[in-house]
Image (cartoon, rainbow over all chains, first blue to last red; front, side, top):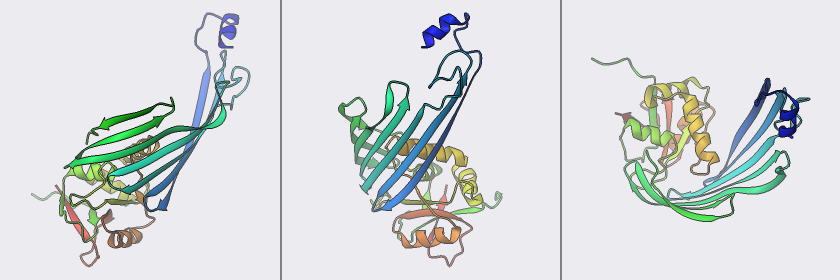
Length: 139
Length: 124
């Protein structure tokens, strides 16, 4: 789509005019017992002169890109943190709003020294791989 | 020569064993990166709303940050799943009562009175 519009228009490889807005709202809820729930909603509004971005933006204002996420975390004690995020995204043909697991973490801190700590984090990421890493967060 | 009096006191639950915090530790605690006291007690952080003047004073006078920097840091940690957000209270009265009644709690008020049932932490 972008290619055909490019060849049909001039030599400009970038839109002459393009404006995009993205409104994001995040909110949090404390559920008690170390359990927290957070969420966000992001909506893009795009208008461009030549090339389509996030919908039919070259001929009208496009509202087709948006993202919603729900994030939960549980800290049963200071050394453990279990967290995960579910995400739905709408963006062209690639993302049609299907709910998916964005990531899941299990984080264990085995050593705390002053303001430094060392730990092990098991991660389930979007690429559907399970990985483990040793973390040494900087202070 | 003594500098100008600071407007905010950092307060903690009476059973918290520490009496002095470095600025770096205070930033790590209010930045939600440091989650337990040296004796192992979980740290419970309470904050006022970002727009509250006392929150602005805490950030600028005690942590050398702007409130928006703290907010960005919390959002980044929470939405990447590596830390939790602080508990938010709606007033300084609620701050005092929550910090006084929650073991391991830390918070701040504009000049704590000596009869308040909390401990005032010195920042160095």
